[in-house]
Image (cartoon, rainbow, N blue to C red; front, side):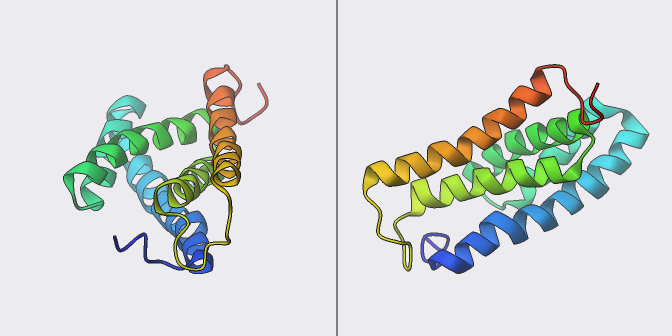
Amino acid sequence: AAQASVPFLPGVLLYGLAAPFSEEILFRGILYGKARSAQGPGPAMVFSGLLFGIYHGNLVQGLYAFLLGVLLAFVYERTGKLRAAMLFHGTGNLAVFWLIDGPGPGLPAMALWQQGILCVVLLSADVGCLHVCFGGRSGDGK
């Protein structure tokens, strides 16, 4: 309910930029990086995902955030670029903001089909990122 009450522009800035930027620096840049040095990538992905899930503070978001946190660590590991995880995180957040919470206060009036197209575009960016990750290409062009 609190998320749905956020007006459009602050929601875009918060969910699309601020949260992904700060959360990726903390959970993937710092926590995953330290855990990876100590335990290797696999256990570090699970560890940082678990902390990310706990951070979200409730069971439903926690389970979703745990899985997303593992996936974001994988994106970071595979691409070697924290900004790839930030982009993945931000586009996913915006899709959820529009799909689940929209049209909320200040959200531009859009027909349901227009909201659907916007969400498809945002989620397609995430699918493209996963294609790069699973397609065998790394962030260094190999």
